[in-house]
Image (tube, helix red, strand yellow):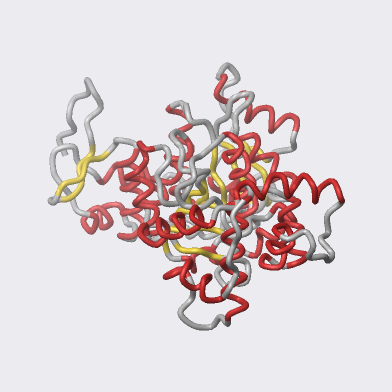
Length: 407
């Protein structure tokens, strides 16, 4: 165990550019630094640490575990106190904390703590298991724009059906201004993020490892795009590797940040069911997309529908209803919520040519839609491989083996 220096000067020097330039006095800076230290001592979701920090404050709690002679109310049982110190003290390494802070500063990762206005207050529903702080790539103010928002999650080994549904849901919702939250993984997560980006929507990736490193590595470009226009968020320090436990605990953040979780595709034991469980425990909305009854990739979603009371999701209108965004039933018909009809993609397809390049303005004129609506649909069609883009405009792809259209 190494002693920790909690003087204001040391705290400011260690935080460097992660310390607010103004607005925080010495005690607040020390508290901020102490939260970072606790972030290194604990694994995500450590309820005993969370209760101790919330009872005593981060700095006072640190002094108590380092110097047992310092007495005071802890909020912990004797067993929790003893086992907690055994977990935390071996990880008390100031050099490791300073290294992680330096990595964060060089990678453009920002620190957000619960006392700051950017902090998403809905995380308070996690109680003692709420994160002590967040590490964020992107504009931290966007954290307060996640009410309402939707988590779209599912299998890494997604089928083409699952990819298609995730793309459709995410593009429709993100295009209408609903933020999309997911885990940055292959499969359903990646499809949801890409569709949101392609229509200019806000999307947030919650990582199980440090926010400074892309995981999976194959999604480095995607996660970089998310960071430029949305948010890449983690509760573990920069440099931390993802582990199975951290993945499971990350899922509680996905559920807590959002107003509802939709599972698009999931096997019988998929990690997405863990996210769904957190959403249900937090009284968040829960939806599941039905799939072919013969598909193992949909066994988990069918389980949610059958055993967990999940809402059956067949389109974006169902998600909006789950979020309470003005879509309801009137007899056998959905009440019009002002959104374009779901067959607008067919109008854009009809306006496209397989031979001539046409820009979005021309296409909008041909199909009688707004340019912004056409551009959003073109983005979705591009993701699905139906259209091709060039400096001259857009052109419809010819299905393999089909004759080109002459118009």
